[in-house]
Length: 209
Figure (cartoon, helix red, strand yellow):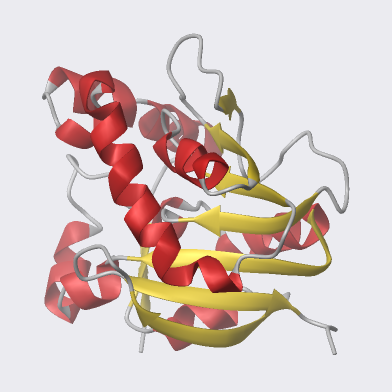
């Protein structure tokens, strides 16, 4: 088991690099970044959420690293009060606010659920764990979709984390590695997502009965 981390000269360099992903993705005409594929991407997220919907608490959902907001719309279409946050949500985004998910402006105990499919883009997982713990209500739930464990071999993870053209910041060999970093949360269950080779990981805040 191991954790591999991209090296940045500073936190600001990390923020600047991550904020480029949407612009470059759209310049390269990658489907998941293109507004013309928004409805198609919402449908994909709806299928993914339906796979783990029974674990989503009633109430508010915060989507971390939500880009232009397809997952937010999917949660809303399924009856949840959802909002997203991203370093670069694009212009005039009504679904996702601009912000750093390590240090948000939301008040304590603001959400019943946090959903994130980009935990591998976190600068510091223990620090993110602290912020998510602050944001979630006492019986709050954390739902992750993790794509780098099944999709990449150990050698591939080592190679990928150093690629200049990629944006992943921290890659783990196992769910145990992720769990160790998220010290405020207790692993409840995990299973394969409805989306490619992705693992859904369900956590509860520690201290719940």
